[in-house]
Length: 90
Picture 1: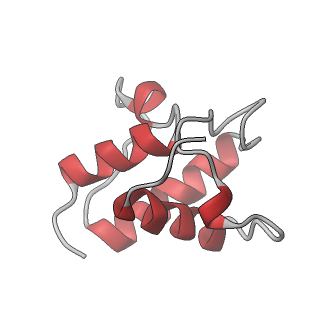
Picture 2: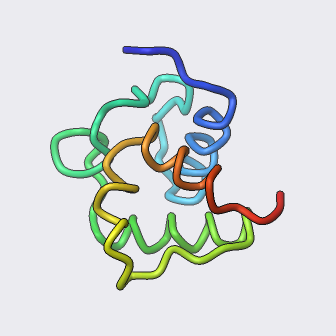
């Protein structure tokens, strides 16, 4: 597992908090592991809840019709990079 950046750690904490992932240590999430299916095991409802939490925290919307979503939600590292690129505030 590669180490998390500060931005990835903050996003991992938001992920665990917003999805109520009991027993999951945000620091223990591999930033390169898939968020869905075999990786962290998230599903489409989790993606919606996480997108809402990100929009509330960072001031931009992850739209369901965006073609970049599959790539952005591929891993914690990919999602963190996407958020850092698009956020408007903290």
